[in-house]
Image 1 (tube, rainbow, N blue to C red):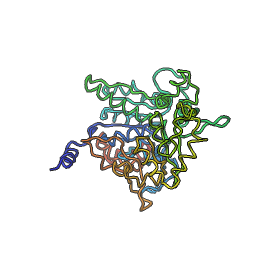
Image 2 (image 1 turned 90 degrees about the horizontal axis):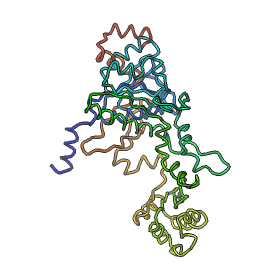
Image 3 (image 1 turned 135 degrees about the vertical axis):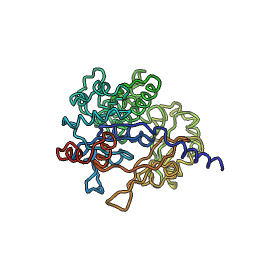
Image 4 (image 1 turned 30 degrees about the horizontal axis):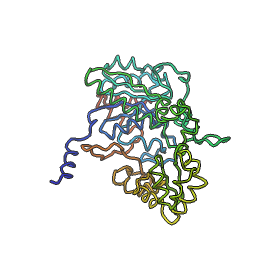
Length: 415
């Protein structure tokens, strides 16, 4: 076999790295569901706990589709629950909580993302779970954390709120105008999810060495602050708030081409020299207005933009970006959703997954797994589960409940 064929054979033989890891997740919306979906992509068995009747709150998001069971299902749920099993269980009832406790020892990770203190009030906090299963990795995502003190401990939180609190919106706020909100999709959610996955993997590795479980606590505010990165750091160095904005200490801007915009990032002198030569304005190099990186930023609108856009007028945004990149100047097209759907990089790395839908012949596109590994295969990826689709199977397999017991639970609306 050729080298590539050997690699593909090995990928199939070794399977996925988290095969055998089991996750019990009382989760909702996006932060924890995205984290556990990543774990599922990597081979973990994820059992998702949802309230009977309506399911978790992500099902109520917009836009929606109609699932095979006739239920309306919202976009937040659809994009964050591939490859999981759904178990309906009412944790507000004594019987529901008792079933949850019985399931706990059969899982490696027990995870939740309710507001701080919710699981403790239900009698399902870390101390209780650790008493039932000392080796369990207990995971919480909340707006402001469960461990330690916070003046915001009781506040509810969605991604835009913690993004604002982490300082992401202010650097790009025009003077006298409100800040731009939701500038990067669900950054606060997915940042929290990524740090949660890191925490889970680290805790599992620690357990391998010690046999001990522990509490992994992630605050959405903390995670988003980590993504804000240079905002507090540059301020501490004496820089004004605008220095953290794009294009304030260099030239970072979007320029028009024939079919849209392309973004150019010029952070170093040799990049600026190459850009100036490409667009036919090498005289900028002797112009004192361009003597500093701050000067490039100041002259972007009055001088650089007309020249770059005149150069790109007859090019597509992809062609213009490619010409710059060939000279070592970082650039890229500002893509619309339809551009992503036909992008060869996205297709080649399997970053948009087609998910069949019951209400249309056209599949839904969901972002794939960004973690590529030489011994890991991407597929197949199971679709999102229907509400309670696996309730009977999970309770029968894990707890040995027979049909009569399941029927009784259903009649009492516990499942």
